[in-house]
Length: 199
Image (cartoon, rainbow, N blue to C red; front, side, top):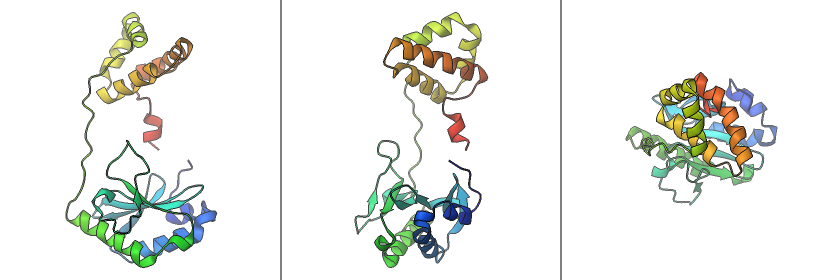
């Protein structure tokens, strides 16, 4: 995904939904939220806290409510577009500009602001599962002191990512390929998904 530095740039990069995104932006800017760019997407904050964002995709556009789980959702418009990954983040999805009902959207946005003011947030829970090292990785670690030291220096979360990556490979050849790929990454002290997190 191209790095975006302004809301105007984001809108221009999504010509299919340009008018609809401008309309959503206009609704949001009627409120006390501050507009910024985070994760290369228009994001709206209250006192530095993320409240909602605008998103454009191939077949739809949306509003992301960061703590959407607390919205009453009287019109049944919210969905969890990342089922299993997040509980708080909910999406209000639109297929065309005609789907936007300004008053209803504004009511949801204002409710999200009030919830933020009231401190309604779901805290991220750290994964505290034990790290289960697959046999193939264990053999590799035991035979390479540098690799083993580097692996032990990683956070438990990064260790889990690597273990899962190896254990989810179906065949022996795939496991071997994955081990070869991650060995230099582990030695460098980076996580499997760091390049995506730092965008």
